[in-house]
Image (cartoon, rainbow, N blue to C red; front, side):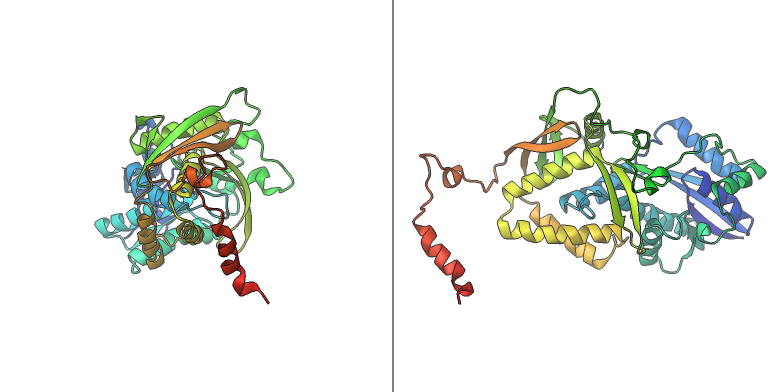
Length: 393
């Protein structure tokens, strides 16, 4: 019997896949990655493991990858200011190459011939899993049952699970497809597919509506050291705790919602909504600190790099040579990125209000219009003449 390692979430699709593959003479080993989606409670992990075994898995690997996810995936993307099409902070996209990496590692350990996932044929995640696996080990076979199996609806999948006594909670028919990790939440399907409808409040999980009864703003000061967030309001936090804390604060003030029609990699447009309070706060603060510290040419070129970087993440090319090369450039830009940014959070907005850095390129004596002005304005005439010379006929 051949072995396959399945990226297992504990949901309906992947539970069906376990049994479906077993019926086709595969020994199925499940891998569950904890990226901060709320699996920390022991009973939840035990429930997921029990469900996989009931479906027919021979073994279940469960790994807490939150620290690795933050250090090796979230931080590089934050330093790069990676945000896809101006709205999406790439939470789900960043998690997929890490999961794929461990699928390959476990396949090697178990001497498996294949890996498998539960992605549909028109999503982005199938590309992220398969391209990453192809880069890390092109010899592994990749199975994608949802692209080829006989089930045409969720109800048919539920009947299949009932037939084999797989313990799926069939009473909770959620209208949305949700993917969550510590960096953000991706939400699609249901009424969201109707572009004429505003997303209902029940679609959101961690952010409060702007009508939430918070009558005063919240100020938070984020301190960075070489591009890495270290402190909130002067208090040092480990990165996992810092992100979790900002998710709670930002969520309370409605920060981090995005409603967008995005261009999927496979060529279709898709309406998705996102929640990313901590990511939004940290991205805003980091970008503002760069405005203070980086010179004009470097800052402008980094905007171009950020666009390409976000595309590479979204397209599943995390381990590509171009992305690795861009990391080297980004890391060079962060060497002087130390300082603090104070932000004002209120009813969904996140606005920088104060800035401080020993490496600041802002010089008040040159910018001011007051009496301490040291800028020699007489030099402007010659500068303008030389600057405009190539454009004169």
